[in-house]
Length: 373
Image 1 (cartoon, rainbow, N blue to C red):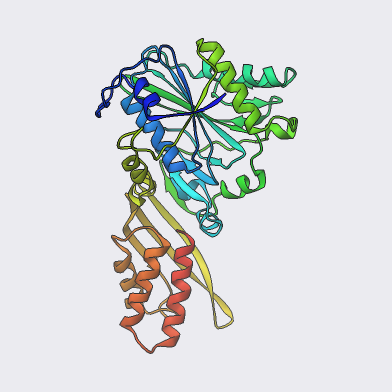
Image 2 (spheres, rainbow, N blue to C red):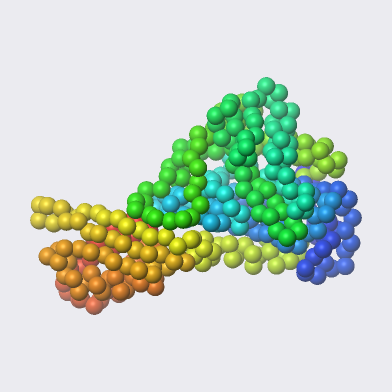
């Protein structure tokens, strides 16, 4: 059963707030099931932060159900340039988000369900959560071949991944979240999670590729709505609580004081890109010049998402050395971003007004550089 989540309901469940609780006492005895009415990844991730930071989960676990519009979500310690096709994402308007949990990169759309299991640190148990999901799926489709693995994935028919896992463990609270593929666009998923960038060297956590499949490909009745209700029912049964899914608005400051500041932080360039572990790019490309090809070599060090070292080498007969040096020095300190490179190109154009041939070569070079960003 879906019921709206009012301000009073919310404050009744909050026991250990670090923000004012408006005088309401906690009356929730054994657990709660929440579902977001938002499809915005940043607001939904902010709910995870808020519950982890502000709720007392002792004896009162929480299941949070949420779905997002098309988004690629990377783990806390990952490199987006290694994990996904950023150029394609920009073209298609697909968001990029960085979680606070570890783990690998996943694609979210409205055909994917996200489940977050909140408990105290002592009660944290990923395998138990996954077994609960398996029971829920089998309750709907008794003959479904789905199993949890030692890597805390869920496999369909022994080979197709339908769920991946990540988690965050705090001093007192913990959460385990996982995806569940019901009717995701598999072709789009594969295209977005395939990095086209060459020559990246990094110690960032790398994702492990896997064959994936939607539950609806196995049984068309296993829609997101059916699966959400099945998981909620099994969770309620397991925790001996009412089978009520409380609908929440993750932007409502009267319910979640301070939550919008969390969502804003998750959208910043400094969090999404700036938290990338230090990496380098060592690559080359060719450009056409007088019936032949000229090789351009590129070496860039990136720290906190900004260019720390830049060495672009082009043959002197194609582009004068002083021009290359000027581009190298201009890029140092800038964001490893095509937008900033475009701005720098415009500035450098004004340094050499009227030289159309130089501008043409400069544009070609900058477009190639932007292509690796």
